[in-house]
Each structure stands twice: as C-alpha cells, then as structure tokens.
Length: 248
Length: 372
Image (tube, rainbow over all chains, first blue to last red; front, side, top):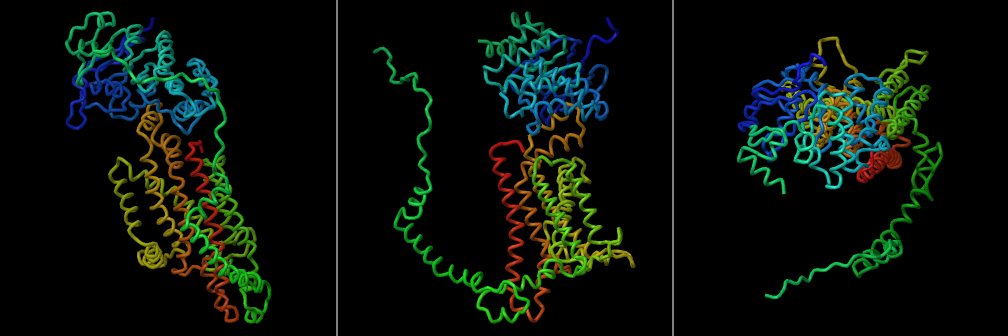
C-alpha cells in the first residue's frame, strides 16, 4: 500500500516517577497503524499515565516515545506536532462549559491551525452527524446528558483529523444506560480503521475490536495478548485475579 | 426456623401529575407572621412605627416642605427653617466641574456622558469581547482629547485645571480599564512556572497590598519625582492615575487568581490536547471561565475603586468631593455644607448602588447556572 512504517506509536523503555513513586516501570508498547489496543488493569496501575504520556499531558523521564516518526522531547514544536496527530478523550469529558457544542469543536482548528471558520463549522456538522447528535450543535455542554457530552468530546478530538485516538476510561463516568451510545461511536470509529489506544474496563469492547489487550499492574505491563488468548488463557496470576474480579 | 418474611413493602404509584398545593407565602400572611406574630415582634413593630412617627415628619419638613429650592440669594436660606437646596443650584458648576474653565464645561459634560455610556454598554453581556476593550481604549482617546484640548480647535486645558465629576470618572475608568488587564497579567504571572516572573508579580502584589492607598498615592506624588532625573517631571494627575491603577491591579489580581484556581485541571488538559498554545488556551478557555466566576467579587473591587477616587484630594487633585468643599469656602454659602454634601453623597450612592445592583443581578444568573 504505502511505505509508511507499520508501527504508528512506539514506547521504548519508558519510565516515569511521581516524586519518589515509580509509576511507569520500563513500559514497551508498539501500536500498529489502524490497530486497536485496549489497556486494562486495577486503579493506580499506571494505565492512564501511559496514554497521557503519549500526548505529553504527562512527561516521562526515561525512554523514548515515538508518534508517527516524531520523537517526543521537551521541545515545544515536537509536542505540538505530536498533539496534532493524536486525539484524546477524557473520562470526565472536559468539554468547555462556556462554549456551545459547535464552538467546542471549532475552537481547536480555528485557533491552533487557522482553519477558516466556515470550513471548521462544516467539518463539525459532519462529525456531529457521525456521533449522531447534529441537532445539539447550538446547545451548551451543561444542557446535554453525559453520553451526549462524551460523544461531543469524541467529535472534538476528531476535528483535528488525528492519526491516533486515545481514550482514557471514556465510559467510566457515565450512567449505565448511556454507556452503549458511546461504545457504539467507538465501534464505528474502530470499523473505519482508526488507530485506537483505549484504557477501559469494557471487556466486551476489548473482545470485539481489540488487536491486543494489555494488562498493567503496579506500573508495568504484566501481560499482553490478542483478546481470544487473553480472556481464554491468561498466563499470569495477577491477570487471572484481575479478570476474575471484573468478569462476573 | 420460620420462613424469612420481610416487613418492607412498596406500592406502585398510580396518581396522575397534578399542580403543587397553593403556596402559603402571600404578602398578607408574611406581614402577619413577621410583624405581629409574637409579643416580641409586636413590641418591635410598635417601637419602629413610633420612631418613624417621631422622625419622619421632621425630616420631610426640613428636606421638602420648608426647604428653599431655588434662590440665588443666600439670605432666603438663612431665613428659612428647612434645607437650602439652593446651594446646589447655585454652586453645582463648581461642585461638578471644579476648576475646569467655565466656558468649556460642555466638554466636561461630554466626558461624563461618554464614561457613563460606556459603562452601561459594558454591562450588556452580548458586548463582552475583546472588542469592548478596544472600544474603551478608543473612548479613552476621545476623553483625553476632550479634556486636554489643544487639537481640533479645542482650547488647551492643563490637567491641573481638571476637576469635579469628570476627574472622578476619568480616574475611575482609567483605574478599571488599565488595572483589570494588569491584574489579569499579574494573576497569570503569579501562577507562572517561570520563577523570575512569579517573583516579580508576587512581590508587586504583596507590597501594594501591604500599603494603604494613601501611602501609595503619597509615594507616587512625592517620592517618584525624587527618583526621576532633573528636569523630567510626570504630571500630577498621571502620577495619581498610575498609583490608583497599580493599587486596583494588585487587588484585582488576587481576585482573578482565585478564579483561575477554580478552573479544573481537565480544562487545561483538554485545551492542550486540541493543540491550543498557552495564550490561546488562556484567552479563549481559561480566562473567560475564571472571570465569570469572579465577576461579583471583581464588581466589589470596582465599586471600591470608585470610592477610592476621593483619596486623590490629598495629593491636590480636585475630585468631585474636594471640588464641593472648595465651593463651600464661599462665605455666603458655606453654612449650607450639609445640603451640598448630601447632594454629593446621593451622587456617589447612585453610581455605587447601580454597580452593586448589577453585580447582584449577575450573581443571581450565575447561581442559576445560566451561561453568561
């Protein structure tokens, strides 16, 4: 097809400390273009920290993080270059409450990439239709349900035409009846060939779309396998214990 | 063992929605409950009514019935038993415009109209944008042209001749228009990750907050000239304006900083994640939210800034209060100071009360979670 490298995100020997606390221990992870990786693990295992390092919301101290050929360094231009390629969806949505849904979507491209306003709005309407809430464009985030807000957040992340989407527990703050409307959007995105790295406890999602399931505990990757093998025959005791606790 | 039987039970509802029961909060009921609801309340109500009965007729008689409203001769006031409002009619030009040249007073009136008009415009949320700030800068230019003159065929008027309400309003507007952005920058600087900037901003804020306004004004007007090279002098009005602006900026900075701290980290992270730079995120995401949160507290500082303009009289500027006391040095009218001051108090009250009423209005909207 093309001569683009097969791997789009690479973490090599990444280490990070919060003060004296060793929060990421020698993390090695490769994500192939168009592939989906689900990261799971108990709380405090460092799984959110891993994906927050990928777009530099957190700084790692050792090791290399390479996003589509760009090596992350403290250089602001490198950080901006990586953030342009990476979309992020947060557990708590983090929509801008003082801006309308439309403005939430257009503010990034218009300010950061100088996209003309009309063009940004057209793209925003397209994406709102894709996440199935085109009728909410004029509303403010506070007027939407949690599921709708998270779908707006996904659309906002897609506005920059990212190559990789990071999901940090996107359904954990939602009421049970709203989880599926967000998962549906994520399924659709996966089907369209987006590269996705998801921190989630939605094991059904992992089973259906993941190319690789990664289990983290205490800051290190304990086990990584395709979903069939991961769920059917986990190797490590810690993985077995975790799975027995979350799968009823 | 008997089979387990629970007491808990629930009955599925079947009632259709109906209107809420009639509210028990009619005015009549409130009056009965609060004014004569108990023996103590009844005694207090009677005492209050008696106090009103004793004082109110005297006040009405003095202020209205026996008052002299319009008489260019102060003798009529001396003969009358009531208030002498004629002092206001007679002296209002000096009280309102101080030493501003008499035949140029229309310019002073125009300045008052511009400042009040811009203030009213600023109250409407639909005008809230960086354009409003630009409009204020333009208005400032027009105001200075009007007051200083010297171009467009206007007679030049030195700042030492400025006085009265225009001086008060220009000082006030200058303080807020200059001090608010300065305060925002100080607040951002105090949270900066760069130690030098943080130290400078923190130092400025803490020093200014540690001094009374009067000392800041004295320093600006007496000490600053000592530090300047010989022959260089900064205008007295400008020195007072700088001192007032710096003083306001320090307090505004602390208020704004409180608002910045209230913005959740997720907002900064989301702005980072969509690629906004520091100033873009600050200007479009963080500040608009922070300023909305602190608007009521900021209004408080703004009202205080208005009242603080009276302090400039100690460095020899003729604000409206000082202009009034000067007007009362006329031996014919000096004994009617109370009436003149009451008029000025009413003037201050109208300005401050409108601002505080507006602030309460905004606060109510904020409490209802409405988007400003």
